[in-house]
Structure formats: structure tokens, C-alpha cells
Image 1 (cartoon, rainbow, N blue to C red):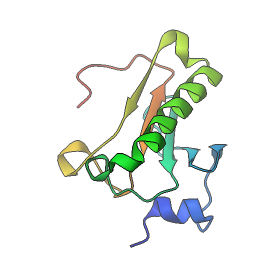
Image 2: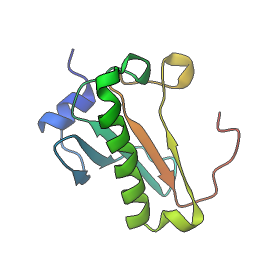
Image 3: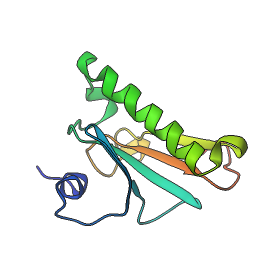
Length: 113
């Protein structure tokens, strides 16, 4: 099943890419919940975090490092930012393709839901 993220990765659906390498891409969210709302998508189609395997550890770590670099590039490292990974319906997952939300640029409340 091709998800919207799979179609973005293949270039079938356009997106504003702010990072791209051989393991992941980062795009601007089309419905931002903060001044900076960036999605980090692995090229490997892992449906959700709970389905990642041991061999995905390096990819998941790489995605975290990419998130940190993007946050620094956007000047969010001083004021702060949030990373979110949704899993399942109660977790807010709407697309079955693992991805991280990088949110920043305003004070984020807690608890988030």
C-alpha cells in the first residue's frame, strides 16, 4: 500500500524538502501546528515505531541526529523544540509510515494531548 509519504518520497506528490540524504528526507508539514513544523521521513517504509527492527537502530538514530541539525539550523536549539512520533489511532497516527514531527518556534504546552 502506497502512503502519501511513499508518494512524496518517490516524487509523485510534491513537498517542500529541507533535508535529503540517502536514509531520510525532511519536509515542511502542510498543516503546521507550530511556526516550525517539519516531518522527518525514513526512506525505508517502516509502518510505525513499534514495528521497527533491531536492524533499524542506525536509521532511527540518524533521524534523531537529522532532527537536531535541523533544529540548530532553524535556531530552535536555544529556545527549545519537541520531537513527536505517533503510534496507532490513540497516539494520533494518521499515516502508517514512521515519521517524526519536529515542532518549535513557540512555547509548547504540556501535556500535549
